[in-house]
Image 1 (cartoon, rainbow, N blue to C red):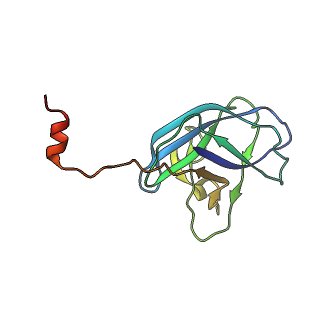
Image 2: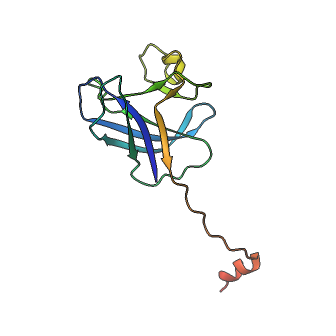
Image 3: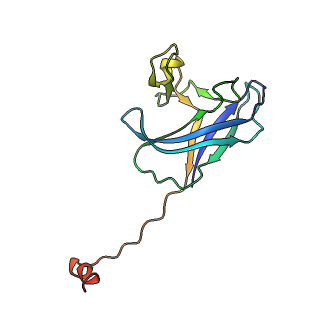
Length: 153
């Protein structure tokens, strides 16, 4: 099980909110290859008006095998209307670890950017993950001769 955890707020318009959920492989300091994409995931109503935030957990539709370093995030689906919800942005902490993907034609460089490039002083988005480690795969110690004998005719 893998869930994305989001700290969300709104400006009070209360449009239905749908998000595309993503998991990316780590590409060094920024997300890289998409490992999982769940489109049009509904955010349950109940998000408060800014400056209040509420925490939402949205489950991916299928198990997502991840190991090592990876990134989790979302892309809003309301590109042609006022935004339904907004994510929290934290300016506290020692190190900045967040990134945002800037679409073409904006006031910032296109592509993956550190948060403080777009939001000066930004350190972290209100994004997290909840997951359960996979159980270990049972392994039996044996010899190569026994393995070959399994397939002997």
